Length: 462
Image (cartoon, rainbow, N blue to C red; front, side):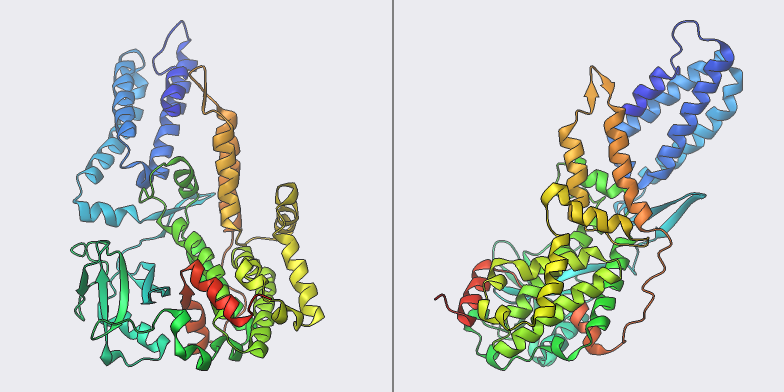
């Protein structure tokens, strides 16, 4: 809409007595702007009906102006090519459309590069419930089949895979046992209410965690892993997610009132990951029945959060600190009392970054001093854009509020700056099974009541 007004006001519909050279220059300028805009964000604009209407209307206006400005004919031909490319893409089959939709663009100073085609090698976050109140979060390819996913779950849960089946449960409660070669993300499989790993008699692998007798014997794998290796593995996974986020996704996420427009897949995965790391921290602590081991876990997580900060990964660092600060964990007074003073001091310093006072001044100052590449705390970045969007009108007296758009653009451009010169972690993580599984397969409690019951079981209320 705002580009149509820009085109109109720039003289494509020449009104008044504009001189020829100036009018021609302005028309070409607008055509160039629209062409760049359409090429740059084609994957995001393809489904927008008002964009299609705008492009056709603009073409008619240019066609009329060719009679007055014959030198526009060359520009008109280029614009025709752009329209043909859009038309060809719109005629793709639904499958081809969906495949093309996942092609993310990376903006660079000297041109446009594909951020990486998300085809059969694309990876997504997948939840497999292992009890009624907990799930295993794992990263898998979109081509993964039931047997592969089940094998990964069984390995993580240390259960015999031959005794297990993967079940798709619909929202109505109907259960369907998946065959070994069923594709989890195939178009023929309707989105289940949840995926569940069950024994062959369709009982849960684990009973509800508050009734699970295995908890007393459950070892904490994290205690035997180097904290630096865990932090590097966390950061590498976050980078792979963050680096696939296109800055335009933030605009769609903020402006779109739909639950998911299909344009924000990478951003939603990164936000989901942040939330899951927070829940993972809570789950690890509350599933540890030994007081001494819980103290060791708190020390581990504090060090991991500090390492993530040192690696300029504020997304995971914040998630870990927030997980330790949740009510179910922070109320464990006996546990926190035994944490050494130097760790409490480090934790307090890290907590200061999460202080929301003065519009998160502590975080903003610290993050501003960090050199890119760096990973911001994404929920706060989205909060900033939402505040700009909802606190300022887009139109004033039928004129575009460009000041608002500039503010949003400056915030969104922050993503590109953070991704600058990203080459992956400078320090390689230990490529062990324990390190990979600790980061790629998170056992998460998905029920607040269960979390508090476990917390009160560990340290009953006085």
